[in-house]
Image 1 (spheres, rainbow, N blue to C red):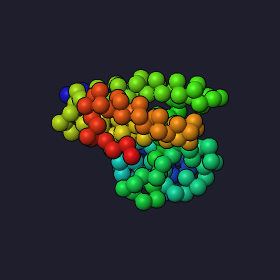
Image 2: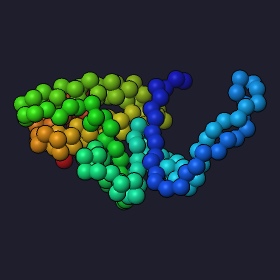
Image 3: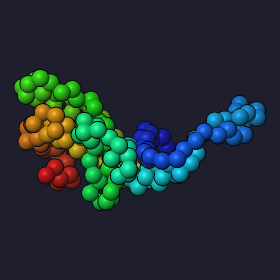
Length: 176
């Protein structure tokens, strides 16, 4: 079976260095550059903590971020001291006034509908949790962007609630 790929990753801060290893490329022996070190090991561990297309970072990386970057991160409730980057929020553009900012909510539909369609198409398969988590990530990203960048958290939540009602998913995700 073919399932559309979703990528996830971990970000860690610490020791890492490049090395060359022997490998096979196009059926021939070759040298390949890779990065190794404790930070790589830590990043791989972080990545395995979640399902869905999520970027996870630990407290050390979070502490290195400036306040603007922290606006695009949230603490993972079920994973103390771990954060995720709300990368779908980067689709939205902060506007000069609230009315213009409110117009950005239309982009949510371009993000969430394909993710929702994947979840519905592959529901009750081993991959459905990944697609469902993608829908949740888009919702969380939208709420946080419109809260932190526009001061329109309630408006974003009302628009998400309308979408959830229309797609009969309101009982599956808590937006409060």
